Image 1 (cartoon, rainbow, N blue to C red):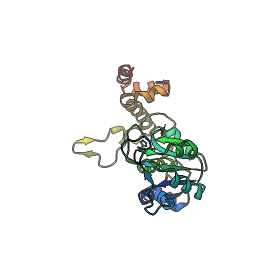
Image 2 (image 1 turned 180 degrees about the vertical axis):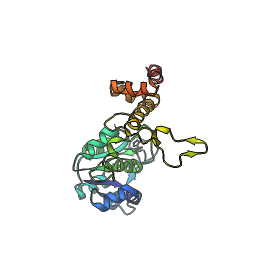
Image 3 (image 1 turned 90 degrees about the horizontal axis):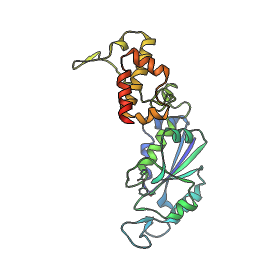
Image 4 (image 1 turned 45 degrees about the horizontal axis):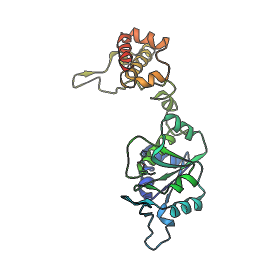
Length: 252
Ligand code: JCQ
C-alpha cells in the first residue's frame, strides 16, 4: 500500500510515521509513506502558501497554486482526501475500506481553511477524525495513516489481534486485560484468568466485553442488534444480566 501526504510540515508527519509499528511496516515494505512539502512548489520569492481571504475576515487561507502543482507533480494514489472538520468521520469501517485498496493520499489543511477550489476540483473527498478543530491536518493525517496501516496484512505480529479487539467483528469494546503481578496494591487479578480453564476464561471475557459496552457505549451494542442468546447466557453465568439490562434501559 502507498500513502502520500501533502503538508507544510513534512518532518512532523514523516517523523511520526517512523515510530513503532508504523516504522516497522515501512521498513518491511507493507506500506510506503511518501510525504510531500507543499512549500516546495510555492513559486514566489517568499515561498508563501497562504493569503488573506476574499471577502475579509480573520486569518489566512491556503492558496490553490502550491497545492494543485504539488499534487500534479506527484500523481499520487487516489482517492486524495482533504483532512478537516467538514469531512466524513473516520471510523473503523472507513479505515478498513482504505486498507482494502492499493493506496490513497491525504492533504493537510491549515490556517482558517483551504481555498475551496482545492476541495472542489482537486480532491476526491474530505475526511475528519472527530468533531473538534485542530491547528492543521497533520496530526489527523498521522491518525489516519496509523489506523489504516495496522490493518494491512503482515503488520500486526499476531494476526488475531486486529479482529479480536474493540470494533472488530464482535462490535464490542474489548474485555479488560491483566498482566503480572497477581496482586498489586491489594487489587487482585480475577481468579478465572489464573484458573487455566480456557473455555471459562473465554466466556468471562465475552461477558466483560458486553458489560463494558453496555455501560460505556450502549450505542455500539444497539448498532449490533442488542444482546443475542450467547451474550445472555454468559452474562447470566456471571450474574451480570440484570446489570447489563439496567444499563441498556437507562440509555434508551
Ligand atoms: C480534522 N477533525 C478536525 C483545520 C481548517 C481543511 O481545512 C481545515 C483543516 C484543519 C485541520 O483538520 C482538523 C480536523 N479532523 O482540524 C482548519
